[in-house]
Structures are given as C-alpha cells and as structure tokens.
Image (cartoon, rainbow, N blue to C red; front, side, top):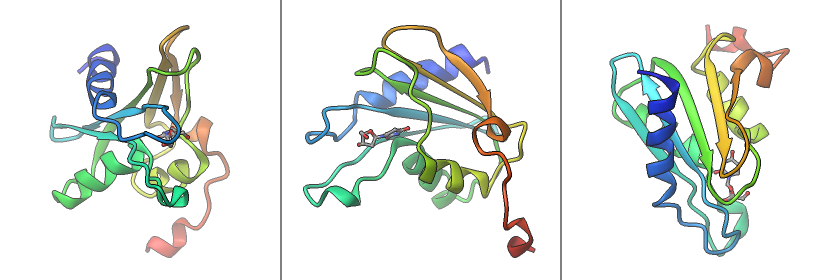
Length: 132
Ligand code: THU
C-alpha cells in the first residue's frame, strides 16, 4: 500500500475524533504486516490529562487484536495548517514495536506531507534490553 493511500485512511479516522476541548482532530492509520490497516483517532476527556492520542489508540486497537508487526504509520491533522508529528509519549510507545527504519508520515490541512522514520523521530532509543 502506498503512503498516499495510508494517509487517506488517516483522514477518514480523523472524522471520528472526540476532541471537544482542543477542537483539534487527529487521525492515524497503522499499516500492519498482515496487510490490514488499523485506524485510530484522538479521544479527549473532561479530565484533560486522560486524553489519548490517535496514534496510541490505533496501536492499542491493533495489539488488542493480536497484531504486533507493523509496516508504516500515517497521521493526519485536519485542523492544523502544518504537518503535526507524533507527540513524545506516542514516540516512546510506538518505539516498543518498530525499528528505526519504520516509516512515519504526517500531514496537516495545508502544506506538504512529511515523510520521516521512527529513527529520526526517536533517536537514542534506550531500554531495549528490558524486552529480552
Ligand atoms: N494529538 C494526537 O492525537 N496526536 C498527535 O500526534 C498530536 C496530538 C491530540 C491530543 C489532543 O486530543 C489534541 O491532539 C491536541 O493536542
């Protein structure tokens, strides 16, 4: 699947955003090694700190279905006029399951799509030894 198509999936996911507080919708689409695309969106709460980002919701959905191997991630933020990259917490959580060459692309309502990798977004990854 192309990154263009995966981004279209992220756009669709953003439509379901529950973001009445920030009014900042985000959609994520995770391409799994089995070919499935798992969507996620941000879910906010009136206790603001409980918000969960689109990326972590997509990942949690995939893991809850027993899917642990991933090909790529697309993130779309329709309320931004620039490409919004995954937050620090999401970078840490995603890094648990992918390697440095894992493609991550992000896009806003305006401007170009940014094509990056997990290694670029999360350098000096540490604590891998705890997984063994
Ligand atoms: N958000 C995401 O879902 N993903 C990102 O990559 C950036 C931030 C959400 C969290 C919150 O609901 C809103 O965007 C504003 O921060």
